[in-house]
Length: 114
Image (tube, rainbow, N blue to C red; front, side):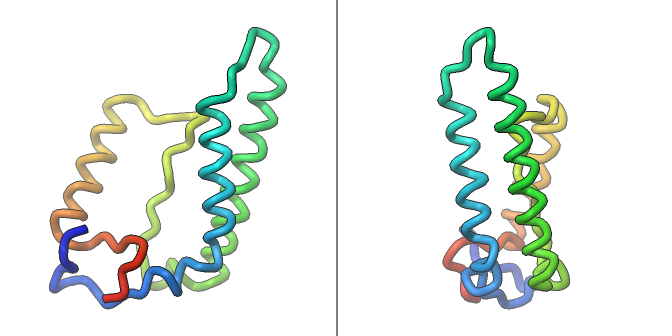
């Protein structure tokens, strides 16, 4: 992680995001299940149930982040939805935007306390 930008405010990411950590971990685990679950021709109901659970976890995570006041101080980038990924062109645009923020030292990650 690059050093913080002189334009970036001090942050303690661990403290600020700890409330949503369990929901984030559940959402990530669901993504792994979706990625590696062998699905056959009759798997529409399973896929729909996983997508519904993913949407509910995202909504709960968003609510927890909003209620903690985190968006008042931080920009939170939503993860890519594995059930509805962006087009390759949009993915390039997302990647370019994140690279730009990272190169300017504007992205705080796990363990950042400055």
